[in-house]
Length: 254
Length: 363
Image (cartoon, rainbow over all chains, first blue to last red; front, top):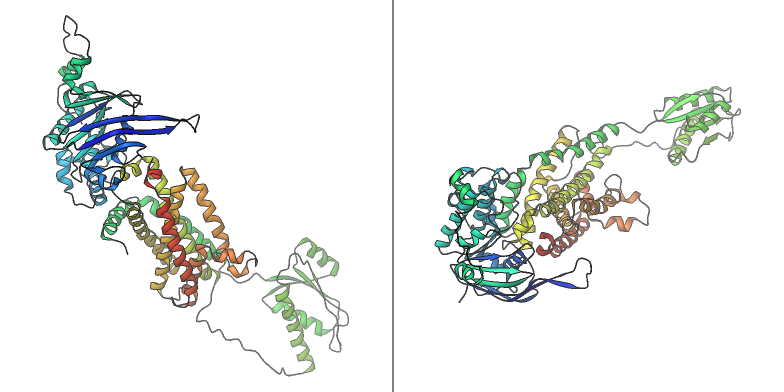
């Protein structure tokens, strides 16, 4: 039985210039994600990726269809679902003047659980920043910290909304390593991304969305076989990212 | 009673709020200045009344009478011509002018004294008239050699003198706790929403009831610290008297803080922007400043407004605090106010939890 089971999920919004008419931001999506998968959702801006995640996270009302996570009906029991999921939002803001350790303590309190903040920070490689404030972290450190916050309740499913957007290649690879590590410990991970390399190398299965609908869903290999055009006769020598990494090295810059 | 989860969360929030020492400190600035100014402005007695006397009588009785008025600290007396004093009265330099007729002497029988006033200016006429009459009577007695049948000795049964500042302080405390509480919850909520903090919290399984209670408890602790500083300042620096029981006083302070924090939460849930919450906040705050007996007793307000004024939350809180601070009333003695506070307590909490819908406030 899949850990996430979505059938005909829909979300409608009133049109901005005509409030009596609706458009569907998410238009009948069905997904089934197995436990232990890294599942990627791809799509252009406005395709409905974030809205889909927000409905699964209980942040947004479900206007049609159904969603079950670990057998719990999201629409009927959102609080119960929130207890078993971890969420990293696209924008992450916290209280001012509060250190990482204190924030993790706060989040643990919100889940009514105890947490070893130091251990969690060590997991995301931020132990030396324990007393720092989130505002003083670099982009990659902020993303890793927001993942740490999402891990305080030891979730079964982790949702990441564009986790690597805006990161430099070193920070990006470092974050992928973290995701793989969490996944190898058995955590199911659902992420949205614009980064094709991320989708191809990190995700075990991919769904591609456009205009609120699912246009394709499969493993990266199968999708390439099915939809990619024939490769050019003379192969290219890698891409600019390979050049960038060859020149600046793989070492993490934080 | 708060649950363990709420208490634990409140502790965490308290630590977070205490980080913002600057705003905690500066929010005390205004009430302290306010108290100090009122403390100095109203420290003296009533201003003496400018009294002009036109003495048309050559008798010594008239001179003595005038002298008695000059000696009375309630009056600042100017002697002079009727025409000059009349002009001064019209111009506002004199509050009233007393004309002693020519026939004013020891033999006089019902001589008529004329008092010129600008009725628009003299609200205290009712107070002054008996005083003048009493001065006349004592002069009369002296000249007719009559011993007064009765004398009145006034004994102050209150252990201390009550200044306006003593009256003002409990009201000012109530007003300050309202301000601090509404700002502490309402404005904060809007700020958290704007920054996206609420959305992040909404992803966790925290219930609105638990969230509100823990924030309110944490804020309450801070407001109590702030008020303690203010009371200490008032008692030590301004020599304000608090007669009643401090525990009862703080009990009311805590209930009041809870009410206004909840009402602040309602504002924060309704208003979507910082500007809007300021505007809506003023709608709640301003009428209460003037109608809730903070600066003057509700009883001195127009009859029509009194019933409305009396049921405002700040009225119940400030009345209760004043009864305790000024008159040493017990909690049982202020039961009517306590009932009002309890009703607002329930209304505030229900409204706050109803209006605070995660989906609405977080997005």
